[in-house]
Image (tube, rainbow, N blue to C red):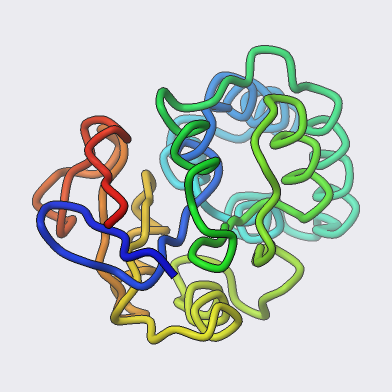
Length: 207
């Protein structure tokens, strides 16, 4: 297996969040949540601040009105997300990077369902990894570290030898709680909260 390098450090594996890290789906996601919030008379501003990187059902549980059918609402939102892939684009530089990686050296850990992850990745031509931990694969979603720990275990590497790429506070918290190294993608999380800041995927080298 090739050594993966970033900021003069070597890693056994790269673990990627999906939305905001591999692909930009922000506009689609935020519009769906705004519509849902309006339908239920909910202030969308705190909802949007908390929803990024979190499972649908966990966001509904936190912000939905009393007595709401969480599973039914999550199913409706999932269908809306799968029906809206126009405007989703890959993050600059990620396609060539993923194509260059050993399949045994990377995984995706996402709060999206497996079905939605497949739809989005295929829509923009990104590869599906051998290891992908999705919403239905964990009992506790981000910020719990369960997903990242599972991914490292399935890749056969120690979590402290992994570099996690994340863009949302919940994901960064999950990666840190797991014991992984963290690279912040984008500007949603202050740089002080991450081990590294990724400006461009071309910074990454394979040794």
